[in-house]
Amino acid sequence: MQSQKKLPKAFSFEFYPPKTAEGKEKLRAAWKQLGQLKPKYFSCTYGAGGSTREGTLETVLEIRAAGFEAAPHISCVASSRTDLKAQIERYRGQGIRHIVALRGDLPSGLASLGELRYANELVAFIREITGDWFKIEVACYPEFHPETRSAADEIRHFKRKVDAGANAAITQYFYNTDAYFRFVDECEAAGIAIPIVPGIMPIGNFAQLARFSDACGAEIPRWLRLRLEGFRDDTASIRSYGLDVVTRLCDDLLTAGAPGLHFYTLNQAGLTSTIWQRLGL
Image 1 (cartoon, rainbow, N blue to C red):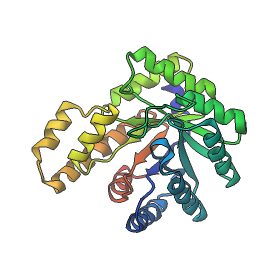
Image 2: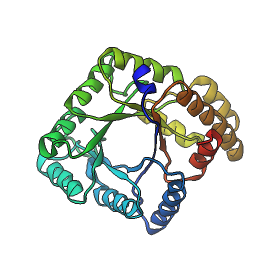
Image 3: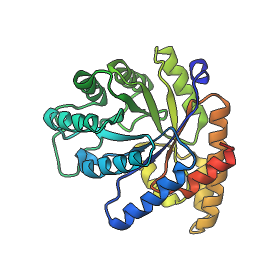
Image 4: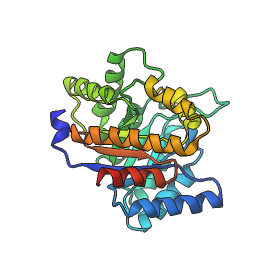
């Protein structure tokens, strides 16, 4: 963890592009509220196969117009090199200097992975086209990607992204700090020296969290799952307990030297703002 401790703390908030006018208004209110916390940047996700590319760029440009740094995501699955190059050049043409490069999910009903199959290939492609124009962030998985067969494979796959030109990484969310610190130590032993920022998922809806976790491979520890299940439909208790758990998680991570926090906000400001205030940030 030594190299991580020397870095200035970086805090960021992630959104997804809304699909309705009401959703746009709610997101606008959320990023304006969270903007008062002066994060290093906001990011906006990119739907499977680029299905939200217009909404992603629109959201990023609106946030940037208000004076904040914003990073669009881009994924390579189910996309051609020609389409990806056009989107990358479009981001550069808008003066965007920060991008989150991911493999992405295959849209339902499509059988082809596209011309670039992995995130390291996308990172290399972005570097090939634009050189050092972009700061490139990538994903990593302290508790292992669902398709990973071994812990050693996880580190190898991540190192390929770093070697291809990634500047920093954001983890999948987790609730076990030991998983994060073990992962960071293993990365450093493998010669990976980029910042590895913990991804943080506030807890407001247990059924939703369980569904997300089953899909992405993030573990809900048994002690946490049983406690949340015990609240049943008591939303207030779930939120209250979740705030305690996630605030303590964030505090432990920062105290031990994590280089920052990246909040998966689900387009809501309330829980993230409360955690931020409790941490004294």
